[in-house]
Length: 261
Image 1 (cartoon, rainbow, N blue to C red):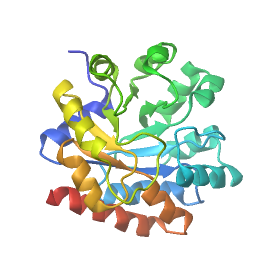
Image 2: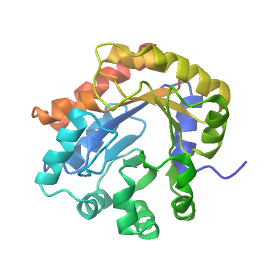
Image 3: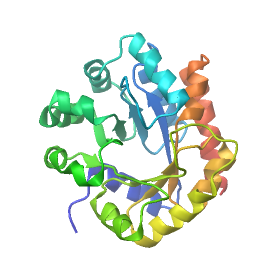
Image 4: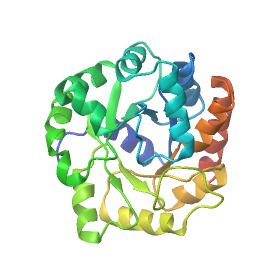
C-alpha cells in the first residue's frame, strides 16, 4: 500500500475511531476575520476544513457560494493573499483547498503545490478537472505530499467509480445530487445510493457533499457514508453577517447530530 497522505491518515484515524467526519467550508477572504473561522470550526468539532479559493467563474457552485466568492473577490481576495493568510492561521485540523484549474494552472502547478503546502494545506480539490485530465497536476501534488481529492457523482458508472476511488487521495468526495452546490429542502435520494456504492467500492474515507443544509440532513447523509461536507448553509449565514463564534456554534450543531447518529 502506498504511503498515506497526511490528510488521509488523519481522516482514517478519526473514522476508524468510530466518529463520523465533519468537513465544513469557508470561502477564503470572506471578511477580515475569515481565518478566525477556521479555529472556530475546529473547536466546534470539525475534522478537516475545506477552504474555497474564489474564482470568477465557479461552474460547480450554486448561488450562495458564487455570491460568497464575488464578495470575497470584491474585498480583495486572491490566491496569493489567501495562501499568505493561511501560513499563519491556527486551524488545528487539516485544510483542503477547493479551487478551479485555471488558478492553479496560471500559478504553475509546481509552484501552486509548494505554496499550498507552505500554507498548511493538506489536500486539493479541482472540481472542473476530470479524472482523465488530472495527470498534469498529480505529479506535483504527490511530490509535495498533497492529497488530490476526486469527486464521484450519482451518474458515475461502476467501472469508472472503481478507478476514481483508486486514484483519489485523502477521501473520495461523493456528490449527493446532480447540479451545483446549494442548500436543499431535503436530502436527495441519490445520496444514499451513491454512498452505498462508494462504501462497497473503497476503504478510502467517503465524504458526501452538495445540498446538506441541516444537521438532520447531515446525519442522514452520514448514515451510509463516513461523513459530510457542509458549505452553502454556513456561507449563507456568513453572508448574512455571522461571526466566527456564531459559525462555530452552527458547526457544533452539525457535530452533535452526527455524533447522535
